Image (cartoon, rainbow, N blue to C red; front, side):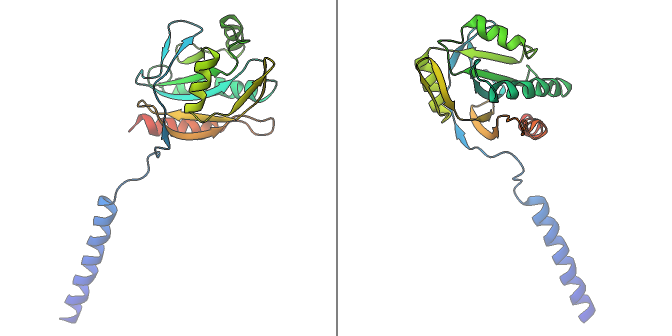
Length: 197
């Protein structure tokens, strides 16, 4: 009788373990950190860009006269572009989105030449600019800090943003520094996770 009772307890414990394991909520997905309002900007390579186009996006702010962080980041995004193509995600499900902070100096022609330096495939790497006013409003949506004085960008924060198809911010990443490249593998892993939701 005692052996039967112990066996029953062991069986109940094992059954309970498996029930908890299988029924416990799965929190492996990316959290929702914030939400940005829909926005529209000019794509220097084509039609106006709508943020509500149903695709996930990695958003990075830049300016073409940036001497270090921006071009280093774009070199890494060029590699990420290749990685996304290998996963069959680039353009159809995921876009890289680069938004100029300095539209007065970053004309469409200047940005087009800049993008060409990084072999940007404009099917899925969008290069955007707006007026100074709507650039400021969009940067505010992302809590992106920057300052322009005498037609020169004095500083800008160095965060990139992963958006889902509903414009929720799902992850944040650092832009590149001379001794610290963009964490491309981490970003790709998060993007794959996001597209599988």
